[in-house]
Amino acid sequence: MFISESLDVNEAGHLTIGGVDTLEIANQFGTPAYVMDEALIRKNCKLYLNSIRKACGNKGLALYASKAFSCIYICKLAAEEGMGLDVVSGGELYTAIKANFPMEKVYFHGNNKTPDELQLALKHNVGRIVVDNKYELDLLNKMASDACKTVNIMFRIKPGIDAHTHDFIRTGQIDSKFGFALETGEAMEIIQYASACKNLNVVGLHCHIGSQIFDKEPFLHAAEVMTNFMADASLKTGIVFKELNLGGGYGIQYLPEHDPIGYDAYIGAVAAKVEDICQKRGIEMPSLLMEPGRSLVGSAGITLYTVGAIKDIPNVRKYVSVD
Image (tube, rainbow, N blue to C red; front, side, top):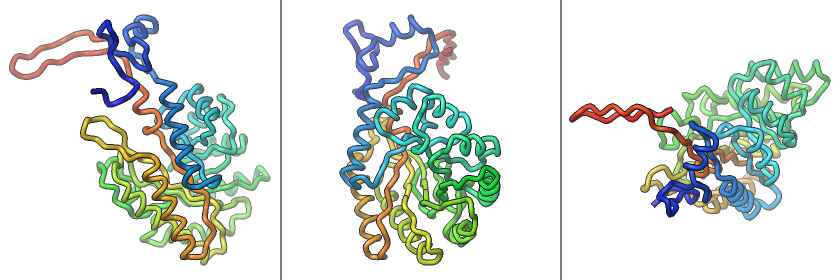
C-alpha cells in the first residue's frame, strides 16, 4: 500500500508517479531528479479552495506556502488554480515575480527580511507584508515613506499554543524567534505603536503554531485565542482587522499510522469557531486565510536517485550510497 495516490507499480515492476514510469524519467533526465505530479497538486488546490468557500463564502483564501517547493511553474500553477502565495524570502518573491503571479495575492513572511527584500516587495506592490518584529516595522515605515507609499501589513502573533509536535517545528509558543508574544503584552504594544505609523495600514493578524499537526484541537484553540485577541486589540486601538491568517502545518502521511485531518473537517470547524466568537464579541467576521504547503505538494513529489557504492558491514549495517 502506497502512502500517496500518485504512486503505483506498473506491469514491468517499475515504480510510477502520476502513471509515468520513474525509470524512464531517470533515463531521460538523469538523477538526482525532483518529480512532481501536477494533477495531484491541482486536485489538492481545488480541495482547499472548495473547503474554504464552503466554510467562508467569499471571505477566505488559501495561500500556497511556497517554501514547500518553489519554482516558476509551481507559482504559475497556483495562480491558475486561484490560490494566493506565501513567500518567505527574496528568492521566493523573485520567483513569484518571474512567474507573473498577481502581486496583490502575495503575502511576504519572514523573521529577518533584509532592506533589499523589503525594497523588492515595495517596488512590486506586494499585497501584504507580515511584520515579525519592531526593527522591521520601523524600517518598513521609513522605506514606505521614502517611496511615498502606504503598505498593507499584518502582524505575526505567537498565541502560546502547544501543537504537540517536535520542538524543532513548534512555532506558536513564547520561546520562538517568530512574531510577537501575547503573554508579555508585546503584541498589543506593537499594534498600538503601528497605529501611529503614517505609511502603514494594519489589515490583519497572522499566526502559525507548528507543522505536521494531525489533531484539529490545536487549530481550534489558536482560532479562539487569535479571534479574542483581535477583538481586544480592536477595542483598544480602534483598528478594524479585515483578515485573520491561521497559518498552515496540516500533517500529511509519511507512515501507515499517520492519519491526516480532512480539509473540510478542520476548515469548517475553525471557521465556525471564529464566527461564533466574532458574534459574541460584536466584531466583524474577518476573511480567513490558511497557508497549506506540505499538504499541497508533499504527497505529490518524490526524488529519484541512482544507487552507487554499497558497503555491507557484516552483523552491523549495510550502507547504500546514492547520487
